[in-house]
Image (tube, rainbow, N blue to C red; front, side):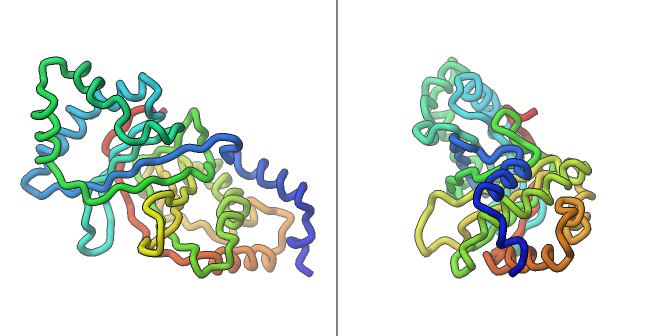
Length: 270
């Protein structure tokens, strides 16, 4: 039998703790991800609304402890006819706060001279909300609750674990977590994270979880994550064992799509 299967549960637990600096033990974080479509003639207006008008609101939400962070992206590379071109991500540690908690009060405080109805109408006219998703954070590499993952460019990998072997979480966090730590140490990655799609639920979903690579430099996306990095992460493992773990990863899920997003603005990230 392969030596990988002879690890005791206790030893596996300690391996997880060592390889993954934070596994969010005892704490759950949520991401509210809003996908937007701004028409070409409205892009300038929309960017003004999002970055000039709404950014101070997100800063106040951060100041009040409602959100842990806000980030705003454009789609740098997506599939043909992608239905959205901008994405806003809000991070929460309390699910009760996800639905624009206290928003009217905050807007009135930040913009005391603005009419709320006119403000919201200006926002609605600047873009279309394509869809909203809520994700649960499963684990980080190179990041923490106090230092959320961030990068100038990200690869957003959308996976479907339905029909797989059921060990996608183990493969992503336990095996790949070690590889991603090496990538962070070598400054290939700024950070990495795994997220499970919380809502919407049901069979209509095209994907069930996501991994995100956060890069400082666009050129770093061309550096692969293969057997050489796996050897560095697991020097006591043979190539045969490592290739088996790669194969098990592939059998645990299918890749629906990968997109590259470019960071345009953020609040609460170091």
